[in-house]
Image 1 (tube, rainbow, N blue to C red):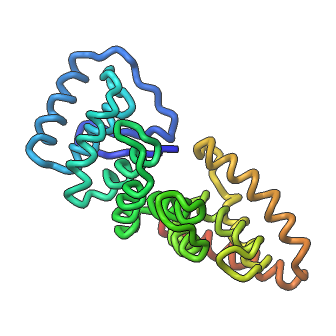
Image 2: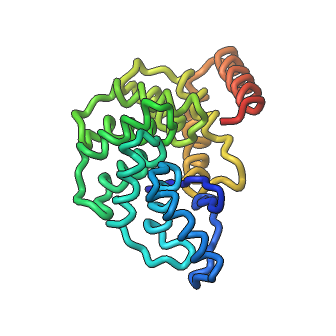
Length: 237
């Protein structure tokens, strides 16, 4: 699943929030897009990425064109713009606008992940867990899931908990599984459908993990989770 956004002076693309845009293009929208394109053509990576998303998702009345989207993503990605690197990796992963290529997807996800983009770290973890575009490696999957999970990525928190629960890439540890599942249950009510679904699964597995813990260990992990929430509420990601 793609989750993308670039913020520009005129344009805020927030797909996961469920904002619906009118299919009909107004004169104002056409002018805004022309302004975006002018800046993109001057080499501004932020505007190149935003323009890619306009074509990728058919925003502001623009006809969807995945090939054009890839063109603009690549221009921004080659300037080391993390969001565009993630977007380009997503296109290679799904074969949208470009031939499907797991190796290329991993390449671009890694570039964005190395810049600490949580969703790229999560996707890289998925690639290592599934062996898509890279040799299957549960230890590497844990590494990248952890990086994303520590930034508050709900999907990564759930997957990390799952690996601890099953002892894949890490020694089996129900206490740590409980901790990560507990964090994943905290998705906000207005979170994306994917995050809400993850939350419900995490709640079930968290409660199952609790059966394997002594009251003292359960209390300890609950306190750890509480402190984590407090710290991250003070410093939102």
